[in-house]
Length: 177
Length: 177
Image (tube, helix red, strand yellow):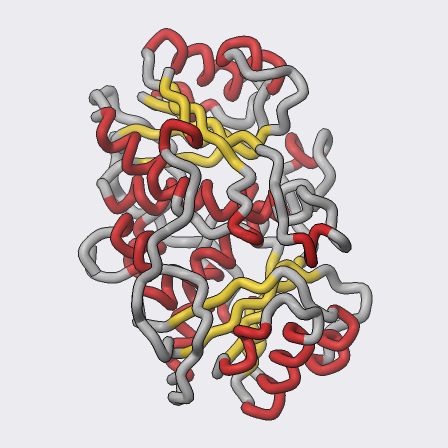
């Protein structure tokens, strides 16, 4: 890759996963990027479940697809489930903030780091925010009361065409003072 | 840069900003990375205020430092304030989720993207989650009821030594099934 901004432009939600095996080492590298992400007070309020076994991956895809929003996930070769873990903040901060105050921000940072790592390795990714939590908990042996961040579908892209990014223009998104 | 994982390892919270001017074009590139970040339903529930005027930057630093947690911010040459904006989700999703349900995750993704872009440009960054919101709103002419994501301090690092990353080991952070 040339530079990080190029990676930002190339990374997109994958809508067509190829029927091509995804190497375990690459899934590990994606997890590494999530693991190394910054977090409030370095609390790392996350854990990851990487699903690579085809039978389990198919079940996870179904738990994501049956909510209707992510039929694209069906062909993914692996999934990384981001779970929320208890955060320990610095005493000065925990005296005024709830321990989980930064957790959603932090899980978002970890999730996008996983996606950038995937893109850098030539792998497509899709962040899924809506899924059947009860079913996922059952399939993956996750405690019923665990809070979920998101599920990231991974796999090679069948079509590597980069779609133009639909974003608010800079003038609308930012103000310089 | 070599690859994204290297960038993850090199990016760290800057604790000693150098007294060296920070180029406006580089701040714009950092904002670009935030603007291009993925978000739930591509709702982009964020806006950015880039503070580069020295007088205003000093005031922002003070609004961050006076909470006691981020004395490191004092020497930063610029700040990017991440604000929460109203999200419009896809109808299928908004019928069951609050419109702002993904906003914190999304702002976390945008914030860390800004930090990666900074690191890639050789710039140090520091994500600040605790600050005097009322004071910031006053200094930057932000509506009083606006929700804040975080404040990111930017500047060249006086000391570029890369500290070893303190993270949960892979075996503790991840499970492979």
